[in-house]
Image (cartoon, rainbow, N blue to C red):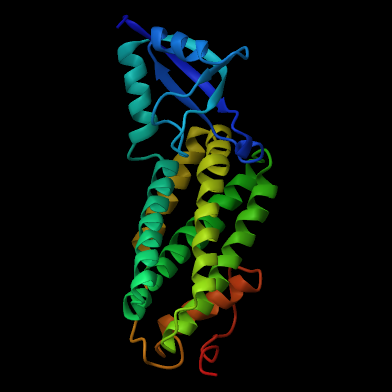
Length: 280
């Protein structure tokens, strides 16, 4: 291998990325890049290396820029970009991965008709939604995106908020069924599809675009805010499934339920409890 590598800024040309395309950086050996470029006929395009595309296939990538860099500097830059402990977008994507693991578990529990297991797992997902989607994104990230006038930021935020309201409603309705011992397959199927698609939108489009347009001081502010939110967040517990109404009657749970009602009505701050929702 040569003493230098190529730093390549790319854009995926896969048709499904026409709206939510993914841009990123790769560090490749020159010989490998030439080989991947020869695999595509179109000018300035190359075949994606193995393991890069999240769909699991090699895709046509457009090379937006190609810069030769020293190996040590490139390796250091890649490490900082992908593995940085203080990168807010690395942290947000890591939280997405945890949610995806829970969705896989929910699918297994549905097949086993494990009502009690689903009651616990969906409460964990509810906790993730409140912490990640509402507190970290709607209360911290979204206002920063609007303040910094990130391209298409207002459009993305409208889509993300609508998604949040949709899977909040689906999750709440599904848990109402669980409380009565019912597994509502249509609802949980829609919830899983909605959440997975939402994560793809954020990981493949919203986060990369926002990351490109925020200054370093903005990212530090975002990361510090996320850490503070996590420190103050009180995790949600599933409670006893057989108790009615849906949430055990405590001040903390009433507050959470009121917040969820507000989200479904289009606001991240709700008023009034949905305690009677599942009681009849």
